[in-house]
Image (cartoon, rainbow, N blue to C red; front, side, top):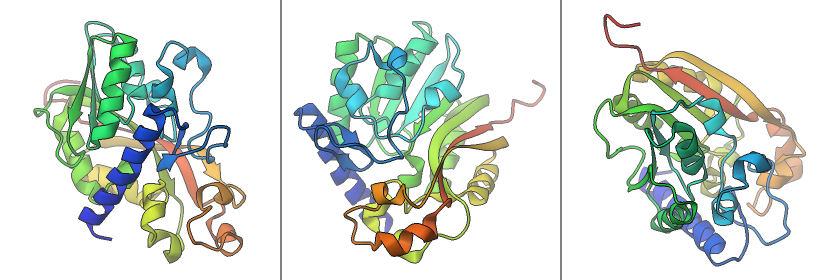
Length: 278
């Protein structure tokens, strides 16, 4: 799959998800909207508790397409500057803004106009003053070198065709000693070609997932240290019926082949401190 083709399909599907949420048509699952009352796939469901989301606009919660809760993972501190790669409807940006407080700042970066419009409306409703949503691609972050303390992301890096460039850009904008703390889908072992070749599954957070050792190697190649991958959900063959449904794949055949090979994970790494500093 060519990079331009992947981006085009990703933008189209996530635009539909944003418009669906904004119109009240239904909550969103990874890659697209779902009908009211329909259960979400096992990747995106039940990631936040009510104590976290109770004060947020409902559309921010419904537009969450993630696979984890990177705001908890990142251990954000008051006064820090945080950047969410692929911020969608803004749920993790708004949660981060609370944690860093008025002395800090939370940026959200997204390439989909409809998601950005939804996120900015959610920011307005939440009254968040220390938030800024940026238009752009995660392969070309529109921020200066060494300008943020923490990079977060929620089930987005797997969607990028050029993951090496994404990780190099994340490293570039982090300050020395900065933290990379994302939730993403990763794989263990070989994945059936029928899944890797499906652009619809790429959008659905499955086909583009990196193998965990490859993820570690790419982070190290970008310059990161202290890389750690912590599984949070390991998907079994029965879960495949959730994220492979209606994708033109024989689930009874593929299901056993993907059993235990896909997982949501917390991925942590750090940018080395400046020379002479600990």
